[in-house]
Length: 75
Image 1 (tube, one colour):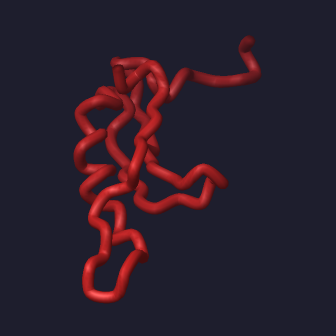
Image 2: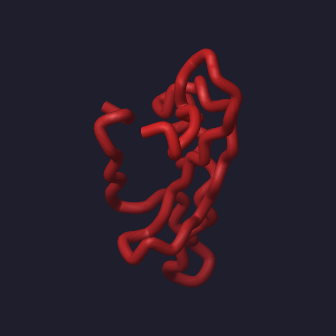
């Protein structure tokens, strides 16, 4: 209604959007802030590249998680 103000994701309005990638428990690994009119899918690879190495065997850190789940904006 009138009390909520303008939508920050409306293409003609100013605002920002926070893109983040987290683990299954909700702990964020990487966050990117962009303009409100930037599509989510354009930031997907940058988010995955920002994930720090996953702990594993000594001398052989894993670079990527085993699985990645996204919402409908990333299909």
